[in-house]
Image 1 (cartoon, rainbow over the protein chains, first blue to last red):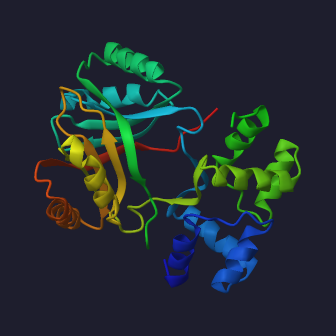
Image 2 (tube, each protein chain N blue to C red):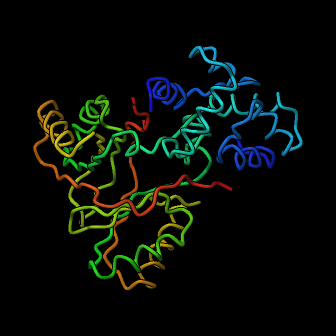
Length: 148
Length: 155
């Protein structure tokens, strides 16, 4: 990745132009042609620097609810547990963490009740009883832009 | 604002990747059977009313050198949550800062996600946060494996 690639990544993480020819606008800002900009962005996606290019929505405003969950899972059962978790579309992030609660995942659903029901279902399917549900009370910050 | 069927159709399209073509909005609008300007106006409206939190690229942070990720969970007295939450949110390395409901099985109400180039970098930031806020009671959970990371598909 060269300086120009970094400048492009820093520029396009938010406020992507909504004009008819967005790559022309971006090219003018960074002094390259529209074709060149398109090629660069394609490469940044292809090489895996960009995971997605589009809109990130506020789930609450769309009428959805989200929560953070933690589970205490014996190491030998993690693989099967994770497999069950990932059959739920609303589980979007899932990490193994160094703690007695070792599996941490976010869950987006249409209602609190739906999530509670799904968690009970997961417990039943996996025999993992110890799952915490930690819904947010207040959001102070969500900003996943990174300077490259 | 309640969402119309067309709104939902638009959301379904723009939550996916934009086509990397000279006229991405025209391409999507044609797919939806609406004029390009209507789509652009709608996207701007979603941004203005906060339905779209961010419109642009989501990076794979490990790929751009941000290799360490720690979740710090802080035990903060209710009366201090507002002040402490705002202070924590002001750190640029803190990407997420949430207050969560207390439950008997878990001790800790303020959750921060901290991203840095290294584990040591995360530890330094946590120390600075602790010093600046005066919160000494916290636990640090480093992620050792990413099982899944996707964006939600609404509707």
